[in-house]
Amino acid sequence: MKWKEFTIKTTAIAEDLVADMLSELGISGVEVKDTIHLEDIDGLDQYQEVMPELEADDGLAEVVFYLDEDEDTESWLTQVREGLEELAGFMDIGEGTITAGETEDKDWVNNWKAHFHAFYVDDILIKPTWVEKPEDDHSTLMIEIDPGTAFGTGSHETTQLCIRGLRKWLKPGDRVLDVGTGSGILGITALKLGASGCFGTDIDDLAVSTAAENIELNGFTAEQFPVVCGNIIGDESLQAEAGYECYDIVVANILADVIIPLQAMIAPQMKKGAHLIVSGIINLKEEAVRQALTENEAFEILETTYQKDWVAFACVKK
Image: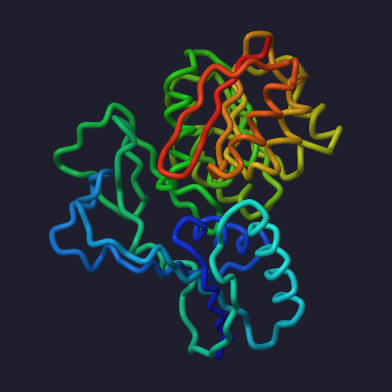
């Protein structure tokens, strides 16, 4: 079978969000090509989160996606261009150009696995299901993950910021609401840290099924961590299903332009004194999110944390 190949020229900082945008559109064949490929670096310890010093690259990346030759190409490209235009509104996506090519059939869903290795976020080991646990493992917690086509391997800075926020603010027995669940990694982390239960939402039904598989893989049940497909921001029935004034922690690793409307409506789901942890915020959008949170009388910002060009906020409900 022939596939239509399309290459988006973008920046390294935008590559994950561009790939996530494509996945949310329903394109499952996506590859990210960096200027420097980690698999080409001799002696790289795949279990280290802190990488050795490398030669400076040009900060550019390519995100490649594939469409079946029988699909309506123009319809897909229109959606992709609209998605790129939206991303360009709040971050540097570089050229954002799309060039076409053609390739033979490949296993797009599984080829990327060669580039996803085990690593640590402080003392938490995040391990792909297909990688053995390191012999010298020093973790206190281990999370196994197979993200499939959902966002959330744990390697992105925003996911790590949220994990550290959960480590700091979550207390044993807390109930957690995970908005934009993706692979389920944040809710699973919360349960591993002692949460009594988690409720997840995601607008992508593929993410919902992926999260369910990862929840079971890590030893939890659908009763402990149900995940529902829908947009909690505008869906009153989903808000009611999630429940009101019953969460000690709300965590959301999504785009800044989604966090702003989310923070305006999420307080009724939270207990007094509950914590809101949000990331997915590029530094160019930090002040816009900060202003929205500051103007919201329901919240007080407790902490702002940073990792590379990404920002996270931890707030308390007054």
